[in-house]
Image (spheres, rainbow, N blue to C red):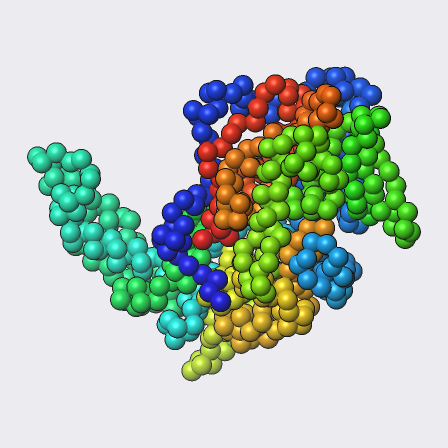
Length: 634
């Protein structure tokens, strides 16, 4: 199972795939559209009730805005699990995690329970694992604005430290290489090639250089390459620690002996042939950190990503909203007599159902769950009653992309497979040993130094190491650097690999993750302890990492049309009359940022804008983002 492919190969196989959504301006010019969330009218919905199904970030956002803007709406959130947050999950010592035995959405049985047992040495901060979202791009302005407004402290998340490692089984003897060495050796050799052929490239490419300017532009290109690739004055890629204080050093690719008391020894250049032969860009997600969503600066809430939903939930409660946990919704129907939704909820510990009535229903659960939860009278595509007909057709298109006979073989479904593994370990395994007094070989005096094995090693403080192994990546903690222990993400994989991992027992997943970690050093792999593994496609009431709209296009076609239809919400048709739009599906699944909390917020704001102004449409998209680019980082 290959969990790696270069973007070039992916786009060749999927030429229509896009990393970001696109607006169809021609279509939107014909519609009355709202370009963004609009202000709600105070008191407009006095006496009305809203039920929000699911206390994920999107559901909490919808509740907060309906309450904070004083609309008069009575707001209740029904959450199936014993916590808020949905896929936003931070695990701490004492927490339990019970997946279902399989990825079936309905009638699946509980599987093995894991207990988180991270240790907290004296002086260390409380350890945690972000088992779901782990970072917030600086471009996600709405989420960061809420966190500032709610007083949630954030800190920098390190996506790439240049000290991270890259390991490929069939290249460089399987030895992990420091990221900067691959990165800057590649830059250097490419720069030398361009330098050597500058005038020819200026003439042969679409540079739009006038003939009389070619010589000048070629000279400027050479100067650019000297800076870009750290070349020598005559355009050659060499490495040297330099002279007279390192001023003229060529050292971007790093050292085998770090400069300090001594001048240092630069790492030998890797040949361009060996770099090309390794295909590091194809076998790992080496260039993911330079893609837009992962460019610096990224953030994480101090103390765990679940500070996001806790802050929202506190605000909702303070404003008069109610969140019912352990309240899985079993049935949604329309009561013609009272002209409201009738929502039936399991009463934990009994076979009885609690019933709630609402004028507005916001569904913050994965769309495929509606297949059995939504009353047939609401979603029958052959009936003129119930939800809008195009809305019903869109629902069934999603169902077709989730529920089909896969004949026991992996096929992409609407809900993506993804697994993570977390470990705790002593930080010296990646941050290095303490500098102390030692007696070096052939020396009689003790000096302040580091172990011989770490002479050329720059400690790793945050960032991601990459491998072509099934674990794909290792995330180092971006906080609490002086603690004795740290929690790292020891695997994060997708698609078929994740699907197969999800079928394994927990111990087998951890065994695979440890084997992958050992590729970065046996001592490192052996030092990992207290592992916890999660396959999101097995998690009750969630059953996936994010929505894959390309699967809808594959199984039902017209994914863009279905997406745009669902984003508008739906009215209820009774045969004699119809309501205003009062049924909405929210969550990142109906946003231009699927798989991201910012997308969840955007979907909620879109829905309540439609509640306020049903005459204004949510802007239609002409293309949808592909989560393999948007989330997985291909």
